[in-house]
Length: 302
Image (cartoon, rainbow, N blue to C red; front, side, top):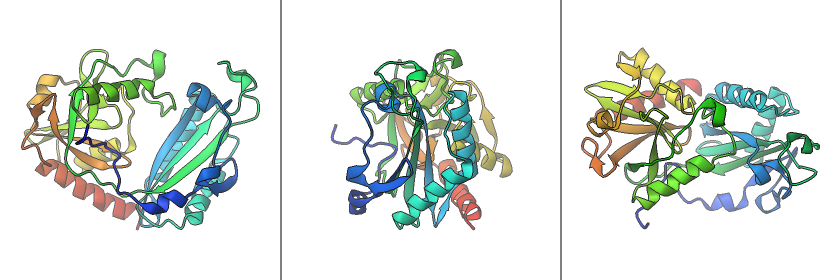
């Protein structure tokens, strides 16, 4: 598709050809950052990750991101083998090695490590975790609001694959994204198991109706850090906000819709299933929340 946009679209930056990557205690050139084909992340998607964004020398909401990372590691029984302080130091060392000061994005990934044989059981990962930090110069560059299409793929129950985990196993979301692209959209709008509007394949989803901001209950989606910051900003600024069940009917009739995520902060939505949302451009509530979020980042990084 020629006119395809993603929520993680960034300006081209030639400096990314020469970035240095943290891999298991060493900082190496991009071309040398290689892992074994026996790595459990490559072989089985057995791992967790966090994405962080650098603003003016500050990794925004770093404590929350590291809280979530260590909680996820405990949930899937991976021993990171590093203290929180040491892992933060690795992030900062990678930043320094790349001379990055702002407009950078880091993806911190931890897998169960190299397996002794190419099978599933966790006990076959005996050499300790693989820890990687990819850091890129990355200024969001989304030329227009996003088009969404509703897909049949659901975010499921915690006893299948808990959607609250930032796991490497993303095939469900990838299939949803493919279905949306085949339908002529940019990304997928995914429902929950009860048919209520839930999230997109990559971001949390909000609508605005009559001056109130709605998002899903959070029961079946990643409870994103940016999602929570938007909810908190609404409450602090007397903007009615609801975490609730709502349907596609409510969504099609919304005045505005937008997505939230660490990379793009707040991304406006133009249409859903071919139906224009509001004016099809960024609405006044989305713009207000963007400004409030920018102020929050300034406070965070002061």
